[in-house]
Image (cartoon, rainbow, N blue to C red):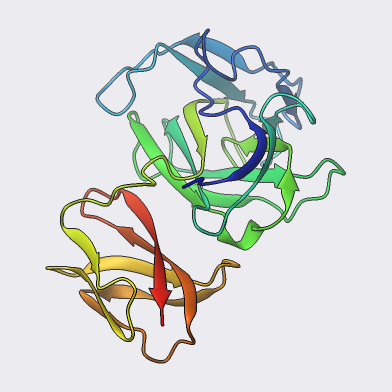
Length: 245
């Protein structure tokens, strides 16, 4: 199964010498005197992120709330389309404050549907954040823009980020406690022995239902393929095609 329709997709962006991101043409913007994005040794390796290299963004006190950095069009990250089966973008961040992080995808023409923002829940430790781009399906992108500290600031703030992925890296085999049966189904499908979080969409990414259940009743749906995304107790997300007949 191919999680993304791609022409060329250079991920994960891990800033390692043999990986992606370290030699890209990152441009910083709206950040006072716009100090460049730095690629440095990981200053805080832990069980979440043991990477050798990470990106360091210095958010100036006089910078705009939307100060950030962006990859180069028609280069760097390559060209890709978000697939409705797997619309997750992830990033690891290390921040000393809680504030929104924004990610925006941009077309070659510079058109964009805008950024999606998530606030980190942890400070002074690495945290993996997941951005749901299911509302951005079917458009070809060739640039990623990252806003590490989307807020007004009264003092300088340093943000580290790493391991940017496009498409859920946990796509594939589901954990043992999520079984998806029967599939195909005429009506009822069992997800697990205990309730799990789920989102059911059509192939265009339109959400049909979501909740926290053990069994799903799909009898009201027309026959066809659907995308079921479930999240297990360790917050890993998995996707599965479900056939309703």
